[in-house]
Length: 344
Image 1 (spheres, rainbow, N blue to C red):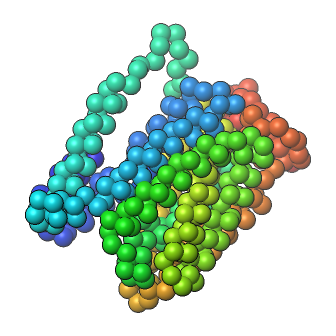
Image 2 (cartoon, rainbow, N blue to C red):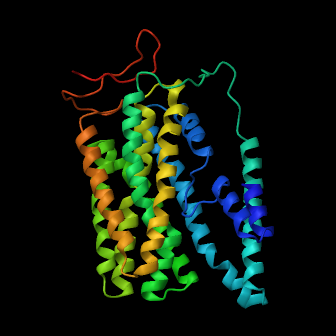
Image 3 (cartoon, rainbow, N blue to C red):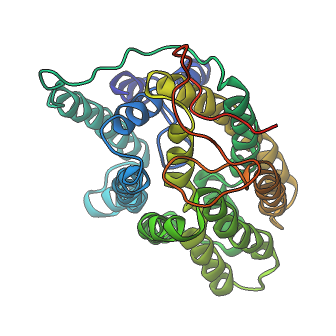
């Protein structure tokens, strides 16, 4: 992260920057898609009971989303520096990348303060997936479809579309993204309450579906006000699946394979999300109508329906209710990683 920020600040040629963009930590949208994510998920899940798992990941996502919202608001800082002190835009953007690098240094200090395992704590050695491979690969495929759809509406492309369609400036767009981030952050805590009533999968699907419909409707809005209203409504609903999704993945495997499960579900999502912005950019180059938003919403609806059809009766530990395809919980006698067994 530190190296990425420094290189983007000092290098000016396109191809070296493209290489660093590919291997570095920059993300075209807010949120973390780096190596930190699966490792943090696995460690967090080891320090909480099944009952408190979703709430823990909601707080984790809440803090990250609020920080991302502040970052979106700060996207207007280069314009402010240009107007306030007469700094050239190129210099202002270079300063922004150096600030990004300094945040990486702050992360180093925070990680060094992470407490080590207490004496006598139940330490878990990481292992590869075994019996739970099938369910994790299925989840990874579904999550990748959702991420591919989300790549059509990453914040950078959405900002471009708002500028093309309505002429919104960078500071105005940053302010909008700030409030969408705040609404998303608040939704994480609401998702915990909903999941306690209807379950993780139902929460993921039935909050995601209306947000996807909002996404499809945005290009048809005649002016900026209703478009932003739908964007805010979507933000209040679309991210409720984030803590519930993480909690679900961590629930269906045993502790020693949580890092593997988190990686296998995260890496394909990142690759899928990286493919669609190219297509979205090409669509925006030929039309300002908003086809990327319609495609994204349609694909997300397909994802929701497939997820519901596949996992609606597969309940993780901590959820009540029975069913023919319900999971039976516990480690098997051979020590394999399966925490669930499928009724046949």
